[in-house]
Image 1 (cartoon, helix red, strand yellow):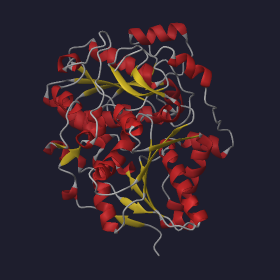
Image 2 (image 1 turned 135 degrees about the vertical axis):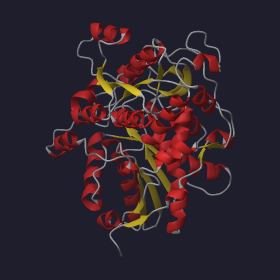
Image 3 (image 1 turned 90 degrees about the horizontal axis):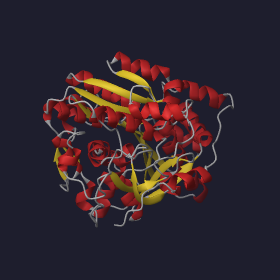
Length: 454
């Protein structure tokens, strides 16, 4: 048996259309509400932030949305991404399970994020936008948008969560190499950032704060639009290339997954892998267990409430119905910075409410333990975020060993950890802390969630 089997599609197999799960859901998604009036928003409400093409995708119910040729051409830089069978990991675990992983770390940004960054940059350029403002947690999204900005000739301003800005200086340097301007959030460059710093000068930041700053930036400049790397429907739509390719690659392998797994922060890489498989299930074409894995320090799916809430701390964004820990909640500075978000994508939250997915939360030490085991077996150093999915895949494989029953496990390896070596250093030195679920702080944040009747 080989150490690792690779399943590769030719460039002509890059999908020609993204998949939209809304078309197959048994219920319509809850309306998105205006932050001021509480009434359903229309395209004009979103126009200051997004180009009209993305607004149309945000509300689309079409099963397929065509991928423009310039976007597919840019995808050729790294897509289709490979699918591997992890024979060495299987042997290390002594499991009868077959473990497959889709590796998105081959992209220029080192993660799945360019799948939507390229699309968003293209549509903004088409509408005449000159500059994009965004936030980033661990830096994968900011890096990807910086790359996309360079590809399409756009300026990019990135508000990077301070905890990650301090932990991951090389991510900042990479973004700046691609031409982006990067500041730590909360920053003194926006009114909201100055307000937060005045109240808490040592604030570690959060994605909610960084989103507020980026939205303020975009809303106050005529040449700028806002770009978000997760949560929104159009972002999840663009990520569906992951699962669409994986369906073809699993067919090449001659197997169907019993379990599909992805890590979750805002929901983009998880949905990118999982939604095309869930769509097959909804259409009666297969049956799968689908598992979303999140950090115990920010467990919106497993501990949050399903309610209307703001996507940012300044309450500038529209109200969306999602699993939330409260927009004021600031997670502990765990090294999986891309998962440090108080809420979950509305569509991911909806499929959880419909019972189509399972959710589990894990601490960062067990996640890093899984990441190190995977790296030593498969030779790829995973991002801390991706290690959450690896943890669940290993746990499923160990259950298969205990039960003596084979199963096929597929997970999304959403990115590499080459810029996360300081986190691995802390783990290997035994200095990595597991943060307990902050029940009191979450309860305080949930008290500020607006009361909205359906």
